[in-house]
Image 1 (cartoon, rainbow, N blue to C red):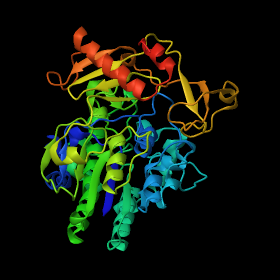
Image 2: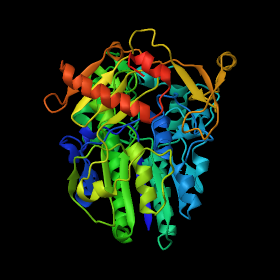
Image 3: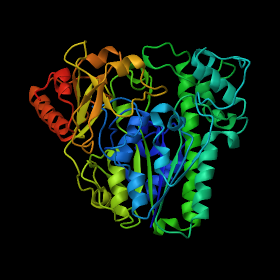
Image 4: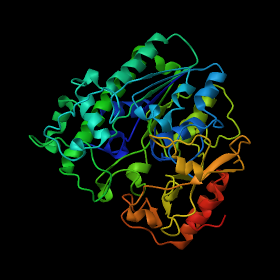
Amino acid sequence: MKAVMVMFDSLNRHLLPPYGCDCVQAPNFQRLAKRAVTFDTSYVCSMPCMPARRDLHTARPHFLHGSWGPLEPYDDSLPVMLRQHGVYTHLVSDHYHYWEDGGATYHNRYNSWEFMRGQEGDRWMGLVADPPVGNAVGNNAGPGAAYRHDRVNRQFMRCEADQPQTKTFAAGLDFIRRNRDADRWFLQIETFDPHEPFFTQPEYQELYRNLIGTGQPLHDWPAYGRGVDNPWPAQLRGHYAALVTMCDRQLGKVLDLMDELKLWDDTMLMVWTDHGFLLGEHECWAKCAMPFYEEVAHTPFFVWDPRGRQAGERRRALVQPALDLGPTLLGYFGVSPTADIQGRDLAATIAMDQPVREAGLFGIFGAQVNVTDGRYVYMRAPKDRTNAPLFNYTVMPMHMRELFSIRELQAATLVPPFSFTKGCPVLRMPGSTWVTDEAVWQTALYDLATDPKQQRPLCDSNRERVMIEHLIRLMRENDAPVEQYARLGLPS
């Protein structure tokens, strides 16, 4: 038995044909939906990029205990668990955050890995002189290091074959061909796309010329936030759509190889994303700076399971791929989950839409804590704007791109273990969040059945009480720090 995971970054389900979109050309996603099971109620957990990947490895939420950071020594890692039971694991990715301080402990958990350079502000090719800005505006012309490196990187990606997404899928397909006759392996093909900047080649841009326009300054890298100045928003949406179409083409190559090698008989295929992306909905762009609206939190998710061979079917059960893919893979390969795993094996859900949870927790460190039962979404805000108390817990003090500062470490105290830290005490340090959108400081309840675009917050004290009960129960199951209840104004 074999398994292939195809993982995208920042893929908005509302832009895919299987979820009702008719303005983006993505025939291979439609083809996948006919060949696999499509999940209609799939939600994120810890946000954004590396927190979601820590959830994938450990099958439990971590955003209540800390922000962006590496795998901890006490974390149970999915690839390690598979390796220990004779399953060969291989990662091929262009997701450059794996090679920063805050992601540095992930890729070495696999038996082997490959990395393709050049996405976003990846510090790849060196150029002493400042690269020309040219006819560009906004972030594309920005003075920051990431924007500069992006301008450098693009000089080495003159055609589609040079782009890291293309190289990533080519390496994944090569792994499959080389190991087609072997058994018990897991391959993770992971691309940073369609994450911003929405860089593609002209052939994809031509498909959306009505949005992108002609002769306008380059602008394919949106600023984050609500009401931010993103000139030519239609152009941005066109570039995003073009990049989704490029992703679709690479997905099609995986499906073609599955057909050619008859892998559908013995190979599980999982296609998902860590989160979605806002393209002007709610007057917001991107993610994290604002509440996790449906465009970000409600994600596309597809699974082919050769054991049951369900194809062209849809599932309504509430699932969270970041938590559930690990236990599903463990069950598929006959490996028992550890005691700390909180995700669910989706085998019966894939086969017959069996529910696996009443509600799911999701959010980002230091902002709203959200819960959904699949119909209602409850966003619980901090009780006041001090957002206190708030602490980071870790034994690997690393932020996204840098180590914790001496000042932060000087404020650290050693505190007793949590239930999942294997008896290890942990460092506690004051935490903070960069989420500043006004709506994050307001508690909101939405009924997605009557208000799918979340335009009208619901006033229903009975329903809110039910959602608070879900929230507290899930926080307790997660062994949430006691101060999180105080920060949110909840009974502990």
